[in-house]
Image 1 (cartoon, rainbow, N blue to C red):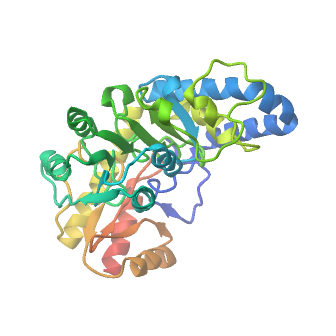
Image 2: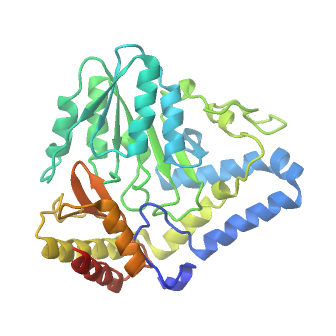
Length: 378
């Protein structure tokens, strides 16, 4: 896929799609089309067309992630979705919520607050690296489960360490114990298979603006039918457009949240169409090849052991690699100021990591320039 599908700055090497994934031009144009339709006749758009348009877009997204449209709602991003889950989870004093030390910082903050409000306890399992087998992930998690554990929250693909967790197996083990699961999945869409009905998790939170390349401000929350009756929005409004002529459903409460711009949601099917036109396997092969190139070259440069085996089952289009100890913020600033390379430098558990990510616009020379910059700065 030519670089020209995106309107990217020519003076920047963008290796941070895993944080903020820019949309290709066709998706931006689709979002603008929907916004122009809103501005052309707002009353008609909001009161007569919005519900049907959202239902159609939700159905396309649901098909892409292996479930029914009735099990999804659009939200701004995975963080918003996680807040809905936290507010809807009826924790009691003494209950425990289990996370692990590879989780995203905002997720920790959400559940710290919810547990504090409800008199529950937040437990954080330690998952040491480097990892060799799936049991190295699964066993520390379930060793921390107690009779008081109500919910396990974990990433499908971790943010700081970029590791693909064995999601289906964790959900299966949790179900056997009668423990709910909430999967934080913003990095997983397109990078790896997301089949929600097969996972049988209770909740799945996602951002569509990463590998799927949907517009910023588009994400979703999946709720299994067994949990839908207890889910409530974090902001109460009318819930539905006027007139309310559709059959009652749990997701109705999330349709109408006020006078907002819904174009990011409605342009999501165009992002699906774009990535499928290229070919998901084409994207995965290209991006993983570049992530592997980064792994080989940076490991050779630093002599530091990678966090996971060299296998597509462990990492996809994004990889975190250990660097020598030092100031992460200082290195991040230097890479940008001197080389105009956008790449996260992460301080995680006392380790300094670099986390390059690749999409269709990334090329081998981009990785070479990152490695050359690291060689000079380190």
